[in-house]
Length: 74
Image (cartoon, rainbow, N blue to C red; front, side, top):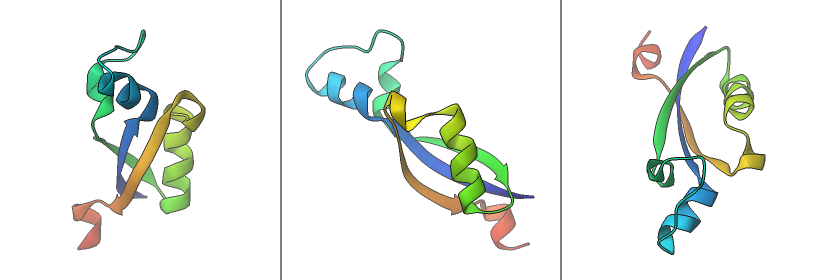
């Protein structure tokens, strides 16, 4: 299995932070990009796993997916 690094942020938190408000359940840091490492066979599987943990319906946005540096040169 390969490791992927996925950049994700929360759109709802980002919008609230812009107007000086706070999300009732998430930290303000979710307005910024977080890098999550996911083990998967391919990019599609990595995206699907991330979406289960951080669903788009709850405001999470995938900014980018890349193969982990260790797997790039393996």
